[in-house]
Image 1 (tube, helix red, strand yellow):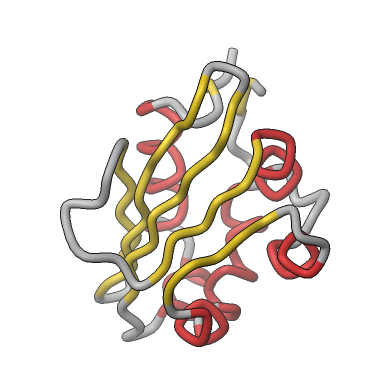
Image 2 (spheres, rainbow, N blue to C red; image 1 turned 30 degrees about the vertical axis):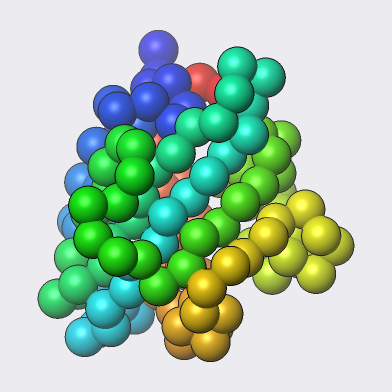
Length: 128
């Protein structure tokens, strides 16, 4: 049995997988970013934050403890599609399924690291 999508266990598993993946760490390099994620689910909003600093990823539940560079809002199906690598963040944004407020240029600079995430997370057993 896998970890439940968007649960605290999922966040820890994602964090561990990213931080043990050399391709992700290499692509992340010295970039620094703090992103708030908002996923609208049938049960209401699920919020978590993603921080990239010093080649390490951190994830946590709720509101970011630090000011964020951008907030990404999407519905549950879009979040699942991106997580399963069936939909790219860029395609979701272009089709209006994903909304960004804040520093869009900062997100564009992260494309290399974000592009490594599907490969880094492919072995994660997730229950959607």
